[in-house]
Length: 332
Ligand code: NAD
Ligand code: UDP
Image (cartoon, rainbow, N blue to C red; front, side, top):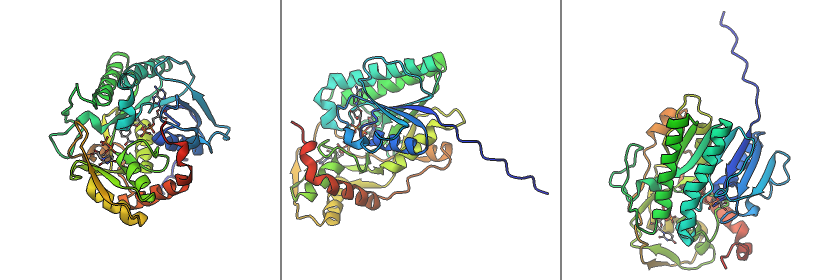
C-alpha cells in the first residue's frame, strides 16, 4: 500500500524588508508578500516611488512603511531582504547620476552589512543593463557585457555592475546568502506616468491623443515582461532551496521593435496619436532579449505567462484610472 503523502509544511510568516517598496515593482512585491501573510517592511525615500502605490497596504496590520534613504545605514530585525531601491528609468537615474551611483554602491553595502549581521538572504534587483549594448543575442548570464563606463547611462549600468560585484564578494568572503536577478524591461500598473520609459510614455501619450515619441528609427528592440511574472520569479529566486545565488535573467523573451509597440498601443487605446521621431539618446542599446534557460532550470520551470497584449490591456486600464489625476505625478 502506498504511504500517505507527507503533510505540507506549516506556513511560517517571515519578516521581510523591501527597499524601494513604494516604487513600481516594489509595490507589487510588497502586495504579494503581504497577501501571503508575511510581515513586510517597505523602506523608500520616495524619490521616484509614491505612497499611492502602497495606499491599500498602509491599512494592513502586517505592512509598515519607513521613509529612509538606503545610502544611510539602518538597523532592523528581518528574515529576508529584497533590495529594489534605485531609480530605474533613464530620465530618473540621470537626474542626479552621482546619487544613483551612491544608491547602487553605498546602498547595497548598507544592505549587505545588514544581511551579514542578521545572517539572512538578500536579493538584489540587478538589470539587463549589465549587458550594455550587447554584442551577443539573446543574452545569457555568462555574457560579460558591452558597457560604456563614461556615458550617460553609466551611473546606472556601472552602479548595478559594481553592486553585483559586492554581492558576490560578500558571498565569497562572508558566505552571505545572496541572490542576484537580472531584470529585463518590465511594465505594468503603478509605473510612474512621467518616468520617461517607453511603455508609460506611449500609453500616457496615446490616452491623451498626444504625439507618440519614437526615439531614433524605432527599429531598436526590447523584450517586455509583465510585472506579475517578474514578481513570481523574484519570490522563487529568494526561496530557492538549492543555494542557487545567480545571476539569473528574468525577462519575457518576446522581442518587439519600439515602432511595433507604438502601433500596438495606438490600436489598443483607439488613439488619434501620430508618431513623431526624436533623436536617439546616447548609448541606447539596439537589441535586447533574455535567454531564460537558467531560470527555467533553477527556478522550478519559471517562465513568463503574460503575453504583451494581455499585459498592455491591464496597464492601459491602470493608466486610464489615473489619467484624471496626472497632475499629481507631473514633475515640477
Ligand atoms: P521605481 O523607480 O518605480 O522604483 C524604485 C524605488 O526606489 C522608488 O520607490 C524610489 O523612491 C526608491 N528609491 C530610489 N532611490 C532610493 C534610495 N536611495 N533610498 C531608498 N529608496 C530609494 O523603479 P522600478 O521599475 O520599480 O525598479 C525597481 C528596481 O528594479 C530598481 O532597482 C531597478 O533598477 C530594477 N530594475 C527595473 C527594471 C524595469 O524594467 N522596471 C529593469 C531592470 C531592473
Ligand atoms: N523610447 C522611445 N520613446 C520614448 C521612450 C523611450 O522610443 O518615449 C525608446 C528608448 O530610446 C529605448 C526604448 O524605447 O530604445 C526603451 O526605453 P526605456 O527607457 O523604456 O528602457 P531602456 O532603454 O532602459 O531599456
